[in-house]
Amino acid sequence: MANFHDIETSYIHRYSADVLHALQQKTARIRNFVTNKPDCQGVAEFIDKIGTNEALDKVARFADSPVQAISHKRRRVSAQPKNAGFFVEGFDTRRMNYDVFQPYAEATSMAMARKMDTVIIDAAFGSAYESDGGAMDGATEIVWNDSNFPKQFIAKDLLIGGTTHTTNYSGIDNVAGNSRSLSIDKLLKARRILSENEADQYDEGGNPLYFIVCSAAQIEALLHSEQVQSSDYNSIRALVEGQTNYFAGFQFIRHEGLPTTGTGDSLVEKVLCFHPQGIAFCSWEEPVTEIERRSDKSFVPYAYFEMDIGATRVWEEMVIEISCFKTA
Image (cartoon, rainbow, N blue to C red; front, side):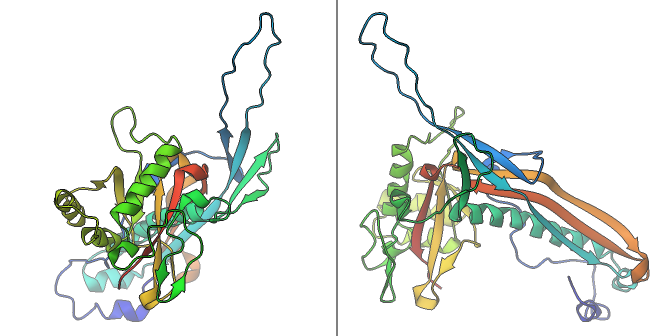
């Protein structure tokens, strides 16, 4: 929220009613590509996970009918209320020759949208909570790490700045150069992991179902990757320039809010790959706005924004974490 001093700086030196928002992510970029469950109720929602079954050979006439146990687990999604709000002084609008409420509301709506992505990313890389055997509490913690799910991690032993990050699935990353960042090798490895786990690459309409969330720095690194062939260059260049968001079987989602470890020349970014069934986003309440004049604040308008959302990782086999060096 802008403070009184920030507002005053606009009074005398303003020559037009043009409003320029700070550079920022304006929409939720990931939400539409994960599994969405709206209209949730209660303090938590549950996502049912039904396991596989096998067809058996019938080896005798009049044999006993088979009785098979099919895995049935439930992932818990806890509601996470989020809110924001601001005041607007009446004389601000009069002195600046435009209604400041609208741009303030737009900035706040953008913040709420970004928070949706943050909740999804935190769920992808965080602990999930599961129940089994008919239990409904979702009390068992499923920790996301390379010890529990080694095949879902690529380049965990990334060697940067003399520090070795433990465990590695692929063995492709302790090499010099840009392959320490996002590379074609890493993309192909991620695609293979999802394929081997029987995650459909396209839906019935031919739309891609493999997604990768990475920063602009990783997309740029792809262009300079040592594995890039001349036939790949134009495709990656189009990706860098924003002319396409598809390459190597993945739909790219650029995001500058991925978690990192280390600092300076030892900065490692966690790149997220997933299939929509791998992550669920639940909504108890979509963003709503209430506006009222506050009698305790000289009757100035107050705008309140609220939403109630949550997310969880559902199938670990459909989520991949790639460690990538991130250049300054």
